[in-house]
Length: 477
Image (cartoon, rainbow, N blue to C red):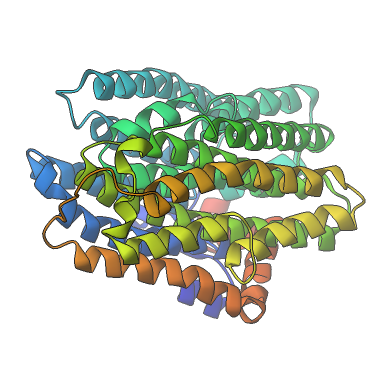
C-alpha cells in the first residue's frame, strides 16, 4: 500500500460496499498513514513470531492469538479509516482487544487491577470521542474526514466555531489517553508490567502511535491552518507541546527510580512520546520549511522509537522468563547468558539516547533544528535535557542485566537462539537506517509535507469518488 501511494502520488480510497465518500465508510490512505501502517505491519510480524516462543508460558493461547489479531486489526483500522465515526468503531476494537490482553494473566490480582483501570478510563475516553463525533455531525452534517476538512475551511459562524472547539477538545483528550501522554499516561505504567511481554511491546511501540496519528490527522488535515479553528489552533498546539515536554521530563526522571524493568521501559516510552508530541506541535510555527523539518524529525522518531521499544520489551521478556522476575536485582548478569540479546539491548538504548550513527540521533536533530530555525531555543534544550535525564535509566538496565556479576546460575529456555537472532537483526536496522539516513530523508520529507500541506489533495481525491448525481446531497458543493 505504501509503495502504491508513493507511486501514484495521491491518496488511495477504498469504498466499503461501493458507497462513495460522505455517503458511506471509506478508507483513505495517504503517505502519512501508509507509512505508519507499514511500520505496524512490519513490527507485528516479529511480535507474532516472538509470541510463538512466548506462548509456552500462556494458558489458552488460542484466545491470546485471537485478541492479538484483533489488536492489529484495530490499529490498522484506526490508521486507514477516512471516517471519524469509523475511527470510533476501530478504537473500540483496539481497546477491547488490549483490555483482554492486559488482563490475560487473570490469576494475578495486579493484572486484573491494571486492566480494570485501563478499561474504566478507556471507556470514558472513547465515550468522549463519540460525543465529539456527534457534535461534528450536528455541525457539519458529515463524519467523512475529507468533507470535514473542506467544510471547516469554508463555513465560519460563531456557533460552528465553538462547537468545533468543544469537539476537538474532547477528541484530543481521548487521543492523549490512547498515546499515554501526561496527564493521561498512568494506565500504560500499570498495564505494561502486567501484560504478556509481546503485548507490552505492542502497547508502547504501536498502540501509542494510534493516538499520535489521530492528533495529527485532526490538527493538520481536518482542522488545519485554514479551518474554522484557526485562531485557537496555535494555542492547542502549544498546549500539546507543553504536555509533551512535561511527559518527557517527568517520565525520564521516574525511570531512575524503577526496579521493575518493564515499568522502567514504560516510562521510557512515555518520555519519548513526549518528544514526538514536541515535534508534532511545530505546526504553530510560521515558516512551512521550519514545520517540515520538525515534522520530518517527528516521523523518523516515531519509526526509531517503535523499533527500539519493541526490541527492548521482547528482550526483557527473554530475561524475565529466565530469571523468573521483573526485578533488575534478580536479573543480575543474566545478559551474559544471552550475548546477542544483550547487544540488541545496547544498540536500542544507544539509538534512544540519540547517538551517532543511530537513527535516533537524526530524529532528535531534525526536531531541534526545526525549532532553532524558528528561534525557539527552549524546545531543543528540553530535548537535550530529556535525553540526558533518560540516560541513567538506560545505564541502570545495562549495568544490572549485562555487566553485573551473576548472583546465581541461569538456565536457558529452549528455542531461544532464533529469538536472539531476530532481536539482533531488528536492532541492527537502527544502525542501517542511521547510516543511510540522508538517502531516505527525502521520503520522510515528502511524507511530512503530505500531512502538513496535503489537505487539498486529500479532499480532492474524495471529491473524485462522488458521482455527479449525488452532488446535490452534499452540504456544500
